[in-house]
Amino acid sequence: MNSPKRVVVTGLGALSPLGNNVKDSWNNISNGVSGAARITNFDPSQFRTHFACELKDYDPGEYLEHNTIRRSDPYAQYALVSTQEAVKDSGLDFSAMDPFDAGVIWGSGQGGMLTFEEEVKNYAENDYKPRFNPFFVPKLIINMAPGLISMEYGLMGINYATVSACATSNTAIMDALNYIRWGKAKVIITGGSEAGITEASFGGFSAMRAMSTRNDDPEHASRPFDKDRDGFVMGEGAATLILEEYEHAKARGAKIYGEVTGAAMTADAYHMTATHPEGKGAAVAMKQALEDSGLNPEDVDYLNTHATSTPVGDTSETNAIGNVFGKSPKNLHISATKSMTGHLLGAAGAIEAIISLKAINEGVVPPTINTEEIDEEIPPTLQIVLKDALEKEIDVAMSNTFGFGGHNGIVVFKKV
Image (cartoon, rainbow, N blue to C red; front, side):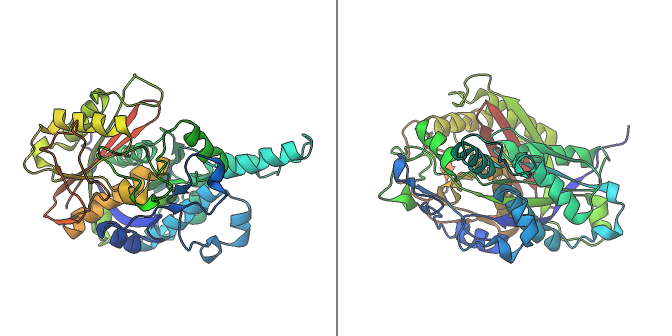
């Protein structure tokens, strides 16, 4: 059997609450800027929570043709926009490749939620007459985002979508990693997108009491590890990574952001929405991702935590971190960038993968903002980077994601 291929990242693209490209998003994240504000997509006053991390100054018409906008849901539009940046950044000329050597593996937790909401409302308001838009189903389904990306660039290789709630993007990245490792593709566009700040989606999370209700102070609402945290802040957007077989990238002189050395998934088998309090599944996933990478815990310099700012989730994750790295890991610094971006749900892993790679390339650990007093249940010896970014040589970064249903997805990146 042939040895596994090495896999590297050669292109990045982002559309986030902190910037409509990678540069702006990273600058705001590394400088500790919050993306939270009162919702503008709809009147949120009917719900317990009135704020979220929406996209800012974003007009799809600046990036996409009218017909594409009309025939696709915002979650798919976001995917196309972030992919435009990533493909340009990679320098790839897909027309010069065998189209079957390149594919797309994309993730979204909810898919076309706005389309679903609007079409069902329209159906009900018209006395349940069959007035559905003929594009209802194509706009709704989660696999349409990778389908549209493949059509845009003529990619005829592997093409499908992953769904594992808030671990979705890491699932997509892991699958892309493995298909290239196995020699089934030379290039895979991967990542995730979410356009979940709609009345139905937002109302559902509000009814679960999962989100913060600091309506008088949205910018400080997402406060991971803080003793007064009261829930997550919803975000939206997309992030794209171009994964490429190392020798293929090297042969064309590509810029390399880092190597994807390993990944792993486990299940908590515990609760529909809560993580395992001891972080059992998360700990095993982290250990397996390191084993897959051929690395030891002491090799990891930076850990981008899932840390959503929920009371149960943050403590279970730090329990898992303590299990894997020890209660007082000397080299490991951790941070929770959802304190700034909010929680992009199915796109969280993708934007945090980009943050992890930028941390490696810039030698900067981004901060955790808003955390004023660490919860006493969080091990005080963990080196959590608070308030301001930390300059540090980073060779290895790990990115954690966990999702409703008990899904745990971990990806590890290394400097090349």
